[in-house]
Image (cartoon, rainbow, N blue to C red; front, side, top):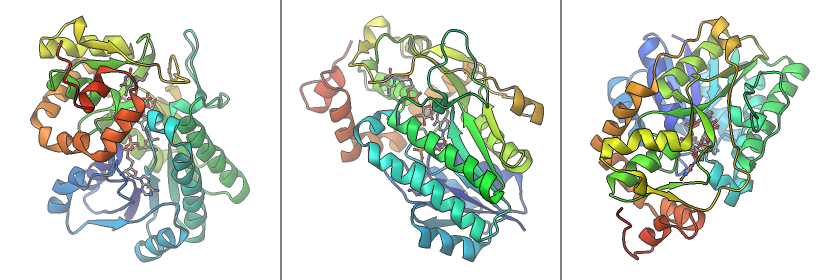
Length: 353
Ligand code: NAD
Ligand code: DAU
């Protein structure tokens, strides 16, 4: 029975990854090491705790805490480690950049040291397309392109990527890096764009869009995201970097306009709010390398978007406490500036289109 240690398993992608591993490898164990920040939600893995109790263990811990990480590795002796623990929201990084360095740089460095010391066979570093910066014109980023991060979040992730490269060169650490595009799917925190759109429309309110709304993102379903992580964890070349994206590139306003009809709402439900500082206008990835390894995205926006809307409709008890939390309200008040969202939160009345 092999053991995989997943960090950040209570987050959005992490929880899908933990479930995927337990279902796909019925003889293996999964240990989930998570600090349970605002983004870590044990509810995401309730079903796993019930159905896979004998092969699943949760450990509360911070990946930047060397003693805690070493203890977990000594106890569990995992052959594989996948790091999905991160501060992941660009908007929050604009207000609290140092927090991002703690987890995304110091945390990665701690894991690299601990994995080396404990003889972990393979370590997966989960990074992002944002490390490349803006993909101008028709450009698609390739793995060897320069890192040009433009937000504190992206810079902190790029810091992790550089450490990973250095450890591979210096110590021969068998560490692989993925740079995935925007993930979407069930149980994504309501601070992120698609859940913002859907939950705001469910509330009969307007949806905040950073002007001009023509920014492009490449949307990859979380099921395809986790299959890419698993493939690279097991089959990726040590020291290798793997981009992946579905190829489904859309402007932000296109995404809003695809969802509006599902709520019988029109253009007046769009509210342009203050721009995100340093907003990257376009991401696009060349995914040829991982496709050669055998990865193929299966989900398409056309069927997955209505399914996603239904998931949030059916799981208000999941997202409502997150949106009502002091943490989210503070973030929204600080971030959205002089917008209808801020007026709603401060009790000046809900803006119904
Ligand atoms: P998330 O914010 O939903 O979850 C992060 C998880 O990490 C939470 O469970 C949180 O409790 C945990 N965590 C945070 N700091 C920790 C620490 N110091 N120690 C231990 N646990 C800690 O994130 P996500 O969207 O699932 O992203 C997972 C990874 O995938 C991140 O590395 C992110 O950069 C990357 N990524 C995300 C996307 C996306 O669109 N969501 C796309 C590409 C890459
Ligand atoms: O590209 C991969 C990245 O995708 C990951 O590394 C990050 O962890 C993940 O959060 C995501 O980053 P983005 O900044 O692209 O995602 P977000 O959902 O925050 O925003 C998507 C787009 O929507 C972006 O252009 C900003 C815009 N947006 C977002 C919010 C929250 C709005 O217009 N209004 C909003 O209220």
